[in-house]
Amino acid sequence: MEEISVRTKGDGDTIDITSEVEKAVQRGGVRDGAAVVSISGSTASITTIEFEPGAVADLKAALDRIAPAGGHYAHNHGGDSNGHAHARAAIVGPSVTIPVSGGRLVLGTWQQIVLVDFDNRARSRTVQVQILG
Image 1 (cartoon, rainbow, N blue to C red):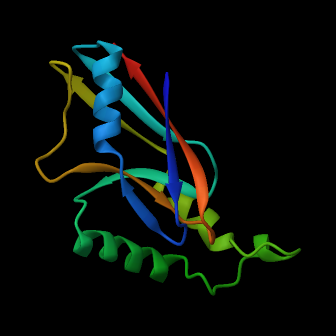
Image 2 (cartoon, rainbow, N blue to C red):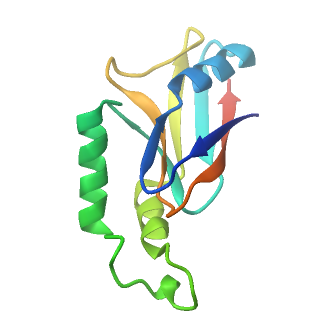
Image 3 (spheres, rainbow, N blue to C red):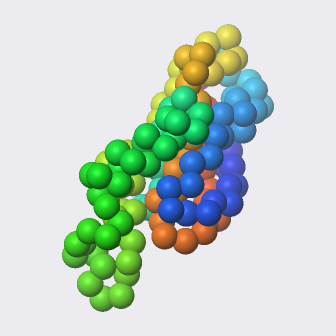
């Protein structure tokens, strides 16, 4: 397993990690199999999207409607203020599994692997990449 360290700004910061995952696949030496990409932590997610400003803004807007930052969250009782981040991360999910064929990730032309940090502060995040073959 490999780890990718990422520094985020929080508040929905979306970071393209596709090239780092591709490098992990190449180092893993697997020709045909899968790459499991996962984030440690309960306020961030891994997903795929067309990594362009409009699609990223649309994802943020959709999650703002579903789990608004100013909403009422039981988690926030007792001093926390990131209940929305936990809800958003649970909705999007902590991991994706991407097929590997011929030693390369099988992704659509406009599909990238992204880390989305929903927490309300900057963080250092660790992404795990497990190559299965």
